[in-house]
Length: 110
Image (cartoon, rainbow, N blue to C red; front, side, top):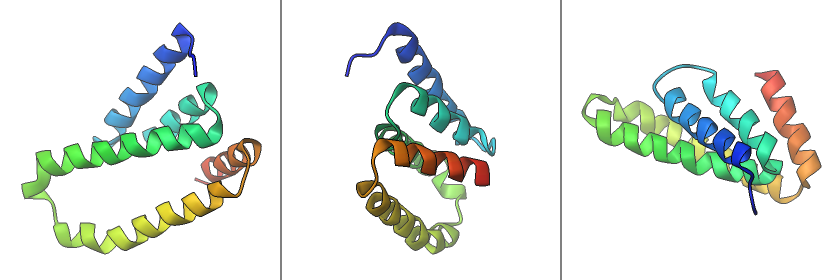
């Protein structure tokens, strides 16, 4: 996929927003999803944002690992993994238009 210069700029800004949102600014992560959805098809945008979020979590864990309450993390892990699996199953069965509508509904719901 070939992106124009403005799309690359928007992608860089959206990736930076993912990083900043991991610093504790709640709700900012939704903006990155919207920005990626402007330049990529909905399913591809979701597949791009998820690894960025995972990488941000890894960096945060390495940086602040000694301050983390790992019991809380492990309590959330099964639910998080289940959500990723359910998302994969749902997005495997919908087209890009339906995925865009689903993402929009989730964002509006939040």
